[in-house]
Image (cartoon, helix red, strand yellow):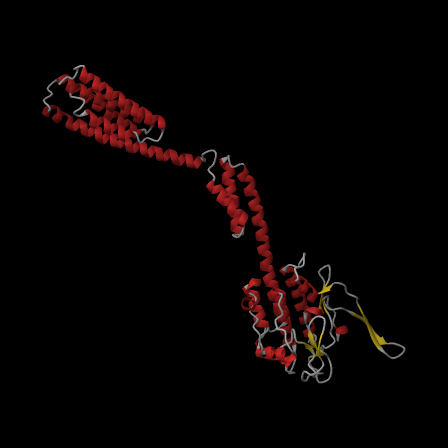
Length: 449
């Protein structure tokens, strides 16, 4: 039967014959490598250079394709297990030991009940070939095979599901025990969900579902063929390869972001660093280096103010200046309206003083209008100076302790909130000078009313 199969994963048989003494013999290709059972054992023992999950799944996919090839030619292997799978040094995969294989249209040679011929092998508990015993290995045996039922392609599919479970979790699907205990567990149905059996293995949900589907106890409920298993694994690997490409691309963008961040004194370089780190996280949101870099960029202020920030600051300052100018228009306009009644109520009948005071308040109002049309610290300072000059003149008309303190305080408080410190100093200095001047004027008797 093996000689009928020509497939890269099935060892070719070169010749079959008998010796001069009448003993049968056959010759076949010699293969080198290690069995999947050895590879898995080395994984469990902490091999310094373990096979990646992707490599194991790639080998498993080739194995499924070889089994489907045999099924299409009417042959069931009946003893698929890790020790019968050979992994070559250059990616070769071979399915070995077709000693208990059978033609699907043939009878159940050797089918029966488990007897005393159950024995321990180096790899797994094996029920040896012989009349009146179950042929195969309990480690991967399907329920129908374990009870001596009709064995067809679904039995090999079950064995492939058992191998898939083991290479994903590094634990056998069937719990170890005596022959009767294992047969009982197999026929009852074993738990094939890796998330329940081995949560630490972090098996992808789609592969867990594939294990469950391939190892259902009723043969008719399993994955329909080994080809379906092969296609599902390839579909997963395609997505896994895409994920790997995204990780590589993410790392490349993170490198570019790091180089740009190193010269982040340049606003353009900082913007580039943010763009690259954004692309890195878009490709792989679990890229810890990109996350750390993003935090570092966002929490480290740039050495120079970015142009867009500078423009925003200037717009905010212009808005504040315009607000101050509008406030000046309101205040100085109100003073112009109420100055005449106040002068009259305070019995100030000097026409010259009245006129000069109104002219000065009018200049302050005009300066506020100009500051509103062309907001700047210069225009606002001129408005403030005009207002203080008017306030100082009023102190020569009235006592500096009557109206002037309120005006000085209002001016100083309103203008001292300006952002530049030099402007704040100018405001406070001028207010102090005017206050001092009014007091001097009072002490020298220069008040006009």
